[in-house]
Image 1 (tube, helix red, strand yellow):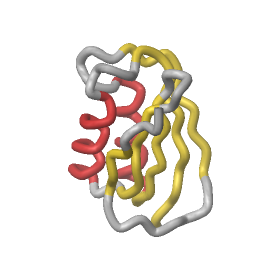
Image 2: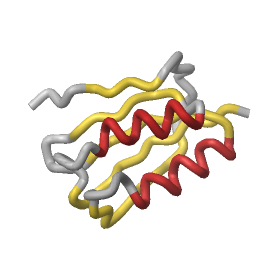
Image 3: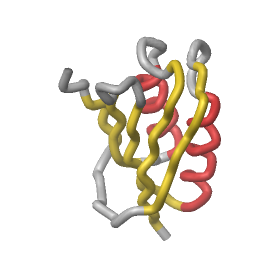
Image 4: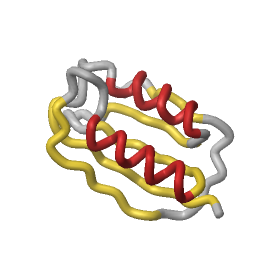
Length: 93
């Protein structure tokens, strides 16, 4: 069964290739949705996939790429949107 989760990652997560790494991991796991930087320094992720893929994806979000320092990961389930792929959204700063 496909699930939808909204994720906020807090810490040193911008300027460390977090979005590009997130897309690579999502593509590898078959997770659909998007990732984007927020003006406050957080990274927000919308992810859809099966339970096991999302668990592995969330686990990775707690680590992030090599130079990231993840302080907090918040996640909650949401309404399924049926994304077709995983997009890297450029921040609207």
